[in-house]
Length: 136
Picture (cartoon, rainbow, N blue to C red):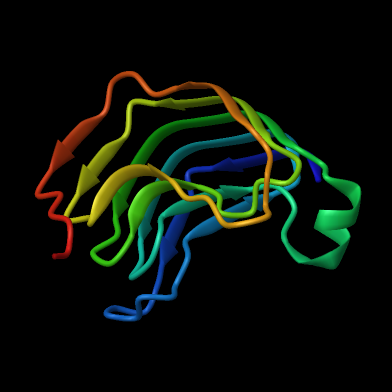
């Protein structure tokens, strides 16, 4: 996809389900998500490049993504996850002014054997983080 705008949305997952994802941006460019509230069991927003057979074949990147004023709660996941599918790479991501409460991780880069790719030019200023507790 290219040229996607999500604004003033509310995403509600099933409480307690660890596999739920809020928003997944895969192999897309020029994506903007603003003023959005996400509550899910898994990750709030996941960026990946190269999921599935077509994604691995084309190696299309995720790039030029702006995620601004996001409110997130992900008790079994991360507020922002990059990967593990990284074949096309992830570039030029701005995650600005997030509020993260009650999540396992604020932001994380996951990698997987054989998925390659690079993660570059990621900025995340202005985050407020409370009650982030890694599961042990």
